[in-house]
Each structure stands twice: as C-alpha cells, then as structure tokens.
Length: 187
Ligand SMILES: [Mg+2]
Image (cartoon, rainbow, N blue to C red):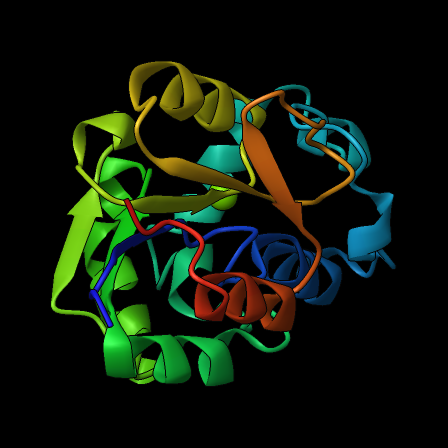
C-alpha cells in the first residue's frame, strides 16, 4: 500500500471546537449554549453577549489561564480513525490558529495522543503538500480545491459548509477511513 500524506484539519474535524468553547462559556456565564446552534461559519459572536468576534477571541485567549484550545473534546470517532490511518499513512496536521494558541495546540495534540510526526500551524493550508485534505472551513475547502488540483479534497460535512464541485463529502470518521481504505487519494 502506498502511504498517503493525509492533511488533517483540527477544529471542527478532530477537535470539537464548538462543544469546547460552549462548555467553558456556559460554566462562566450560566448560559445553555449547545453546538447545534452553530449554523454559519461567521456567526459565533451572535450566540453570545459579545458585540463582535474580537471580543470573543479576547475571551477565548484567557490570558490568566489556558485558552479554549487547551481542552477541546475530540470529535466522535476521530481518535480511533486516526490511530487506524496512521498504521499505513502519514498524518499531517494542518491547523489555522492565532499565535497565542500555538502552545495550547501542541499540548492538546500530546494530551490526545494524536499520531502525527508533522504539524503545521498556518492559515495557508494549501501550501502544505498532501495527497488528501480533510477540512470543514468553507474558505479553506475552496482554496485547497483551487490550488491543489491534483489532491483529493474531502469536505467534513457541517452545517457551516456547502458542497463543492471538486470535494468528496464525508459525514463521519468511519466514512473517511472507508474512503481511504477503498484507495481514494492514490495517484
Ligand atoms: Mg476546521
């Protein structure tokens, strides 16, 4: 079997960003937010009392302690799927993060025993060469599809993204492992 370079996004794909920040927000402010409320890519501040995303990120950074990126729960099935995929392929983590979240991201990857030898923290994800990309961001999906025509682009289906002509959809981690086991992404 040819080992593939699998470019894996974190937030919304491996890490449950919305469940994580909402748990912290609910504890702090006595609210009852749940991840099903997130239906758009840019609507997080509307779910809170924050006037704009700048305020949200200031809170998320939490300068007195760890940021929200330190203790996000795993997306269902991600740990098992990554362990399985890592036996035959290279897991390449590609995640866009604010500068202040870099150390929390590495700590999170270690805590959760993510089987990777290669981590890229960048918003220019397409620049990291991979055979397959798994992503949930509508802007990243469009950019990778446009700039990596040779690669397989996989949309991790979420309410905040839409089908793309060049992307294959998966709705769960078992679906992704099945796709790769069937030979998708091999050139
Ligand atoms: Mg993401």
